Length: 377
Image 1: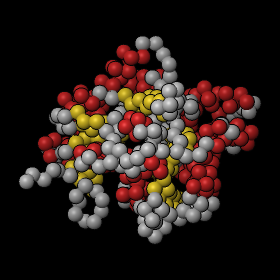
Image 2: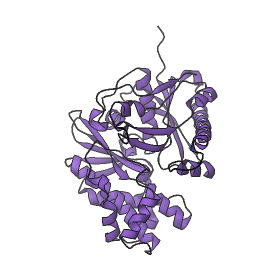
Image 3: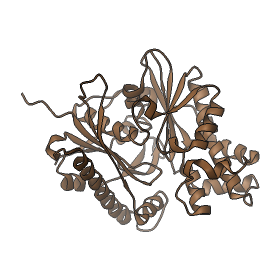
Image 4: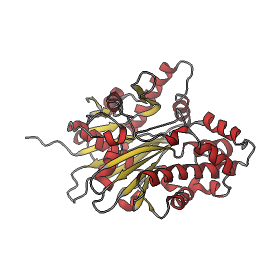
């Protein structure tokens, strides 16, 4: 009997739109851990692709044509990441069971319009399978949406495997472009939700006023002061009053949304660094408020994603979280830039094994479903 390889690749390009993070993971590490990361790669987007992916989040001319070409370009970036992962590890492509490729979310509107709605991740998995010669598992979210779920967040199921404790309640906070919170209880119960913006609005403001793609360490935000009327206007959005299951994205929290609140709070002429400080406080407040609402007994908050490197944001998050230990995920065995890649490697493995994932307490789906679609090599 042939034993299937336990090597899987996970690829994630998130709402920060800075590039692709990939991992090659071994799910049979033999040391009691759920997995071992063999190699990690980051392939940045060139400026043109990043701009096009951002533009495709909004209505524009010739969208179908442009989206198809962007999907091709994304697949080539994915293939480059796969090549770097295999080369760094000295592993042949034939040894890998599958690549889990999330795709690039450009629209996310579950349960809207016709009661089902949709979620759309640009990808070209057929091209990726052709370029890599490895089975590709993709399109993880739409099956959940079809079953009445939000299609997001999906990572909490993996967070349970990686970070769960049978002794204490833990939160896991992913700070990508959008922030999402997982609550892990000792009895095995898992819940989760999208909190709201993570880095997306801060990055937008930083690019606009400094030309830099992000606020390194949060130093620029730390140089400003929080504008209380603007913070109140940001937190007044109806999304924050919704109860889970709920998810969001750039469809809501985008540049026009921010401009409208700057106007409402009479902050359009404020110092840019003060607006940045307020945006950082906004993210910290939104995440801490959800932690207090849904995990008031949490002992610690494990932070992953690019926002885990924003020292100022983590300080504000700790101040707002009220005594909860706030720590980067590396202190729990997996560096912040590897968590989401590992999650989609794990989801690809679950698909290959035809494991139905019970996400109802997270996404609101009607029952456990096998998530994903296969493009064979």
